[in-house]
Image 1 (spheres, rainbow, N blue to C red):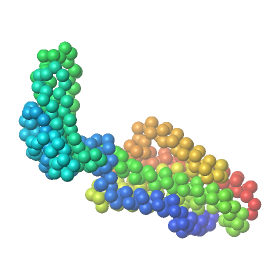
Image 2: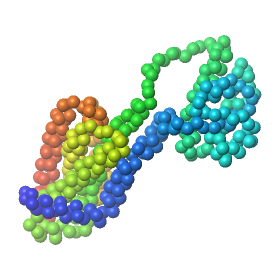
Image 3: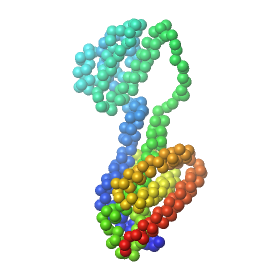
Image 4: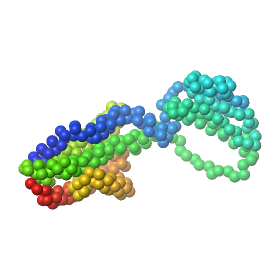
Length: 358
């Protein structure tokens, strides 16, 4: 196989990517998200752990208190970040609508030792990030009040829950878990998946646009044409993943072993690209090929995720500098599987190319 011809095809495809609106928008979207990864971290962390965003705010918030006197007032007095304002309920709700206070708590005239439950109503502004912070802080106050009510009503208990002792944890684990456990692996693997889907479009469009006959009239063989397209897609993987890591660094997120991460992403990306090329050569129609490839990708990911040192785990370990030398063995195994798949793609491309008129 003439590498020069494959290089010319790769150059042609790279120059033509500017006209592929899908890939251009995908790259721009990835870059945009990476540039604002700190804001993304705050937003997505709040989805699965609202308490994580409490540490981002150091403001003291005003809370309107309406209803009867209760020990809950003493719980609020223990907080420096919540300022309690006594007022009527209507007045408090009007102040909340005008954002003069950040929340309103209504406590009914129910004694702590009453037979019925003490129903405390909390009013917040809907769909507001500040409300999430207030919700977490008032939750801690209500938990203290709940503990006091349990002590008052302790004589009613007939059974006691099992006591669980959890280790104390600081506030940094949420940042670590989200950034190194989710954000970095997602950003590194996403370019490989995008490039694997792109190779299907590049191959199937040759069939749909009926340009294969014209291309085969040149000195370029069918296998060289396929490898040129594969090379064009492969170049995008380290470029995009490197841009991700660079932008993460500009956001103040330290990533160790960046070169090793890019090497693993490039080899893994080449495996996915070759898998997509094999599917595209077999089906030769974009919709069917994309569907089969997506299904095969899910199956491959499920199988790979069962391995202890799966790609997500490995990237996390590399980024946190805890992988050890075992990652080189894994890289060698993946490279061997990629080489075997590359041989299969070359052989299949030559067989398919024999049926294409020159």
